[in-house]
Amino acid sequence: KEEEGESFSNSATRMKVVEFSNRALSKYKGRWGGRGRVTLVGDAAHAMRPTDGQGGSQAFEDACMLSRCFLAAKPTKKKNKNKNNDNNDNDGIAAILEKFERLRIDRVKKIHQNQEERYHQSFKAAKRTPWDKDFKKWVLAGI
Image (cartoon, rainbow, N blue to C red):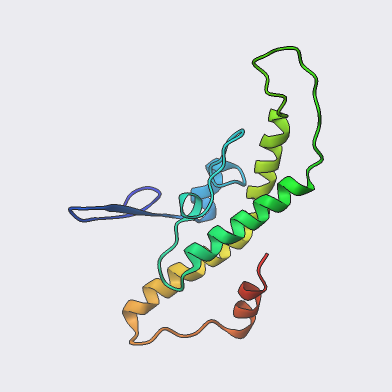
Protein backbone atom coordinates (compact mmCIF):
# COMPACT_ATOMS: atom_id res chain seq x y z
CA LYS A 1 0.00 0.00 0.00
CA GLU A 2 1.34 3.38 -0.98
CA GLU A 3 0.81 6.57 1.01
CA GLU A 4 -2.10 7.89 -1.07
CA GLY A 5 -3.65 4.65 -2.27
CA GLU A 6 -3.28 1.14 -3.48
CA SER A 7 -1.40 0.34 -6.65
CA PHE A 8 -2.24 -2.53 -8.93
CA SER A 9 0.00 -3.52 -11.78
CA ASN A 10 0.45 -6.11 -14.46
CA SER A 11 2.77 -6.24 -17.42
CA ALA A 12 0.66 -3.81 -19.49
CA THR A 13 -0.82 -1.24 -17.12
CA ARG A 14 -0.51 0.37 -13.74
CA MET A 15 -3.62 1.73 -12.03
CA LYS A 16 -3.71 3.79 -8.88
CA VAL A 17 -6.85 4.30 -6.84
CA VAL A 18 -6.32 7.46 -4.83
CA GLU A 19 -7.43 7.62 -1.24
CA PHE A 20 -10.08 10.31 -0.94
CA SER A 21 -10.17 10.60 2.84
CA ASN A 22 -10.04 13.87 4.77
CA ARG A 23 -6.52 12.92 5.92
CA ALA A 24 -5.26 12.35 2.38
CA LEU A 25 -6.91 15.51 1.06
CA SER A 26 -5.86 17.77 3.94
CA LYS A 27 -2.71 18.90 2.14
CA TYR A 28 -4.88 20.31 -0.67
CA LYS A 29 -6.84 22.61 1.68
CA GLY A 30 -10.38 21.77 0.65
CA ARG A 31 -9.56 20.88 -2.94
CA TRP A 32 -8.38 17.76 -4.72
CA GLY A 33 -5.19 19.08 -6.19
CA GLY A 34 -5.83 21.83 -8.70
CA ARG A 35 -3.83 25.06 -8.49
CA GLY A 36 -4.16 28.37 -10.22
CA ARG A 37 -5.63 27.98 -13.70
CA VAL A 38 -5.33 24.17 -13.59
CA THR A 39 -7.84 21.68 -12.24
CA LEU A 40 -8.49 18.00 -12.72
CA VAL A 41 -11.80 16.39 -13.59
CA GLY A 42 -13.16 12.87 -13.79
CA ASP A 43 -10.82 9.99 -13.04
CA ALA A 44 -7.81 12.30 -13.16
CA ALA A 45 -9.20 14.03 -10.08
CA HIS A 46 -11.02 11.25 -8.28
CA ALA A 47 -10.60 7.76 -9.75
CA MET A 48 -13.19 5.36 -8.40
CA ARG A 49 -13.50 1.62 -8.25
CA PRO A 50 -15.49 0.21 -11.19
CA THR A 51 -18.29 -0.90 -8.89
CA ASP A 52 -21.38 0.94 -10.17
CA GLY A 53 -20.04 3.02 -13.04
CA GLN A 54 -19.74 6.12 -10.88
CA GLY A 55 -16.38 7.13 -12.38
CA GLY A 56 -18.02 8.12 -15.64
CA SER A 57 -21.02 9.61 -13.87
CA GLN A 58 -18.78 11.80 -11.73
CA ALA A 59 -16.90 12.98 -14.82
CA PHE A 60 -20.20 14.16 -16.34
CA GLU A 61 -21.14 15.87 -13.08
CA ASP A 62 -17.74 17.60 -13.06
CA ALA A 63 -18.34 18.87 -16.58
CA CYS A 64 -21.81 20.18 -15.68
CA MET A 65 -20.64 21.88 -12.49
CA LEU A 66 -17.58 23.38 -14.17
CA SER A 67 -19.81 24.80 -16.92
CA ARG A 68 -22.17 26.25 -14.32
CA CYS A 69 -19.29 27.87 -12.44
CA PHE A 70 -17.96 29.54 -15.59
CA LEU A 71 -21.43 30.64 -16.72
CA ALA A 72 -22.17 32.13 -13.30
CA ALA A 73 -18.92 34.11 -13.27
CA LYS A 74 -19.18 37.66 -14.45
CA PRO A 75 -16.62 38.29 -17.19
CA THR A 76 -14.27 41.16 -16.70
CA LYS A 77 -12.65 43.04 -19.51
CA LYS A 78 -9.21 44.34 -18.84
CA LYS A 79 -7.47 46.60 -21.24
CA ASN A 80 -3.78 45.99 -21.16
CA LYS A 81 -1.30 47.20 -23.71
CA ASN A 82 1.05 44.32 -22.84
CA LYS A 83 0.97 41.98 -25.84
CA ASN A 84 1.83 39.01 -23.61
CA ASN A 85 -1.53 39.39 -21.82
CA ASP A 86 -4.37 37.67 -23.65
CA ASN A 87 -6.90 39.72 -21.62
CA ASN A 88 -7.95 36.66 -19.60
CA ASP A 89 -8.64 37.37 -15.99
CA ASN A 90 -6.14 34.84 -14.62
CA ASP A 91 -7.13 35.44 -11.01
CA GLY A 92 -10.79 35.09 -11.94
CA ILE A 93 -10.21 31.76 -13.68
CA ALA A 94 -8.25 30.47 -10.71
CA ALA A 95 -11.08 31.53 -8.38
CA ILE A 96 -13.67 29.79 -10.57
CA LEU A 97 -11.67 26.56 -10.58
CA GLU A 98 -11.21 26.70 -6.82
CA LYS A 99 -14.96 27.27 -6.37
CA PHE A 100 -15.67 24.32 -8.68
CA GLU A 101 -13.52 21.95 -6.61
CA ARG A 102 -14.95 23.20 -3.32
CA LEU A 103 -18.52 22.75 -4.59
CA ARG A 104 -17.84 19.22 -5.80
CA ILE A 105 -15.57 17.76 -3.15
CA ASP A 106 -18.12 16.74 -0.50
CA ARG A 107 -20.34 14.92 -2.99
CA VAL A 108 -17.38 13.22 -4.66
CA LYS A 109 -15.97 12.13 -1.29
CA LYS A 110 -19.29 10.59 -0.26
CA ILE A 111 -19.72 8.69 -3.52
CA HIS A 112 -16.04 7.67 -3.54
CA GLN A 113 -16.40 6.22 -0.04
CA ASN A 114 -19.54 4.35 -1.05
CA GLN A 115 -17.79 2.86 -4.07
CA GLU A 116 -14.84 1.75 -1.92
CA GLU A 117 -17.20 0.03 0.53
CA ARG A 118 -19.18 -1.66 -2.23
CA TYR A 119 -16.00 -2.79 -3.98
CA HIS A 120 -14.69 -4.49 -0.83
CA GLN A 121 -18.16 -5.85 -0.05
CA SER A 122 -18.21 -7.62 -3.41
CA PHE A 123 -15.39 -9.89 -2.24
CA LYS A 124 -17.17 -10.83 0.97
CA ALA A 125 -20.62 -11.69 -0.36
CA ALA A 126 -21.91 -13.44 -3.42
CA LYS A 127 -24.17 -10.46 -4.10
CA ARG A 128 -23.69 -6.77 -3.28
CA THR A 129 -26.43 -5.17 -1.31
CA PRO A 130 -28.25 -2.41 -3.20
CA TRP A 131 -27.94 1.22 -2.24
CA ASP A 132 -30.27 2.21 0.53
CA LYS A 133 -33.29 4.25 -0.62
CA ASP A 134 -32.07 7.64 0.66
CA PHE A 135 -28.55 7.29 -0.77
CA LYS A 136 -29.91 6.17 -4.15
CA LYS A 137 -32.31 9.12 -4.24
CA TRP A 138 -29.47 11.51 -3.35
CA VAL A 139 -27.10 10.11 -6.00
CA LEU A 140 -29.73 10.11 -8.72
CA ALA A 141 -30.83 13.64 -7.86
CA GLY A 142 -27.42 14.74 -9.14
CA ILE A 143 -25.80 18.09 -8.71
